Length: 406
Ligand SMILES: *Cc1c(COP(=O)(O)O)cnc(C)c1O
Image 1 (cartoon, protein in one colour):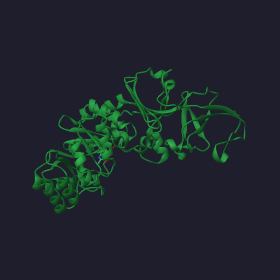
Image 2 (cartoon, protein in one colour):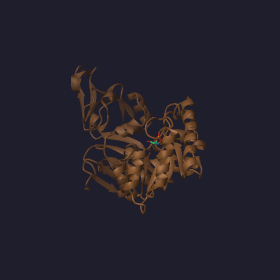
Image 3 (tube, helix red, strand yellow):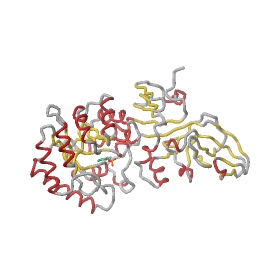
Image 4 (cartoon, protein in one colour):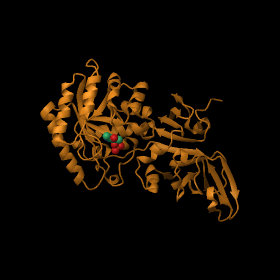
């Protein structure tokens, strides 16, 4: 028997072909003049940063975007050579490390620029993307003199290189476009301030998935493609008008660890609030709120077993929850929490709606202790178990037998 990558019976499957398809569709849609940045922050929105990065680059993405310097360094350690931009703020004392590793960073503060300029070496200049706050109110310069002063200092520092200029929209996924238009006009004006001091940097960018899908013509040189690379619509409002169909890549599965029949009136789980209405078959699923399967999902929640919906009954525990089965089924039967089983499907959108939140949160909240398994052309190509800190690559296997393998 082969050593399993994980000894538990719950796992996430990532279909890398779907991600590749989303990247290829977006590339074809935005045209050859615009570059595509695959945003793989937060472990690739929970999908696995390294696997997604490799897949996106092979499918035509030119850049990678992350939130943290740690995430950029992890990609470099994983052998990624493509350009990477850290979209968040880093400490100026880490600027030389970023420069050394060929990682571009976001800057916008005068003191930061002076400090980083003094610390970096001109033989290894630091690539900077200047962040302009056109209305997101998060990071970036806002005023004309502030912006021009920062740009002048970047230009004056031999160890700093102004490579890009960017902003981020607050409402690009909404039906009402007033605020978006205001931000866009403000960004144009702010770019002209920079142009007056420095000429145009080589990469101007403003579009996330929402803006890129709706207004590719407004996206300048590069689109920062996050949520829709993972096959998810940025908002409900945008769903009817997507330019191509998005292919989700994330599924969540488990296997029943226990099946039993209980009698009318008998309780299930903490608080014993759930009581059987008659004789009922109850299954135990080995996944709980510590895995990101939040307690709130017990309210009207269900999973799929043998192609049928099985309601969650009783409270969700830290590592387990119970379901009411349509009939007696075998221990080890597959349970679909997110994904398709026969004619039934539970999508990330369904879970987000149920929790009253956005789709972004759902794959991010599925904890790393749930192993990630990667598929390409129907074959398993790798797996990660964060608890045992094990990773395998290029281990092909018939997916039908995959559960046994886990
Ligand atoms: C996360 C992020 C993106 C990607 O946004 P999506 O809506 O997921 O496409 C783009 N730009 C910045 C600055 C980000 O932080």
